[in-house]
Length: 323
Image (tube, rainbow, N blue to C red):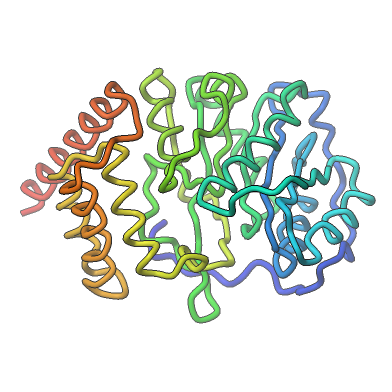
């Protein structure tokens, strides 16, 4: 739940598999609850060992986990291979060809991982970022939520981020949206989407969840399932560059201007106060006044705006009742 503080779940800094694994669960004999994962990893030697160990420790393990080494120049591939040699469900896949290291690189790498899972008999397929660790019962609990709702097409936990040695629920966590870092799809949903769609200014996760709701699927983020993010959001780009990029993304995805204004107003209280929200809004205005082209279909934009205005009505009606 938002604002909750928890201690770090991982204290072992070792990058090799040194702890014994938990008793394996034969999910391959339970196709209705089997899952597979894809992870894109680029120069993640500091974190990838902890991430892998958190999946090795799951009470219900994936039938396959493809970790895509996207041209790393550090020890990422070596560390992954050490675990793969010990745990058969882990597979190292390396991209060797040269390609731009832009905002689409991660999406293309994840899609390469998804492609390796295409013919695998798993009921669920998910993305897990290379800087996220999970509690041991995470996937067991998540799969049970899917079992309770046959129309749940995409789900995941809440993101927790470290500040001053403790993990806090990310302020932007909401139950209606699943963070890209932990998106788990029903197989048929991912197949309907054709994988992630790359965009100039990111937003592949957002496009996926809205598209599924358009098709009648449910999308839900579960507050009591905690995913621990070990790298501050936007660190790879710089805080203000990340905020400006977010505003551009809001525009080309079709966000209604009124919704954007309200959203930025609510973000004024997030650190760094005022500045980050102003920079993000300037990104939106920059694209708006330059009349930059949208990067989504017209029906997607219409559906998104309908959702956003419904949320605004609900928000203001709730505020009126509270007063």
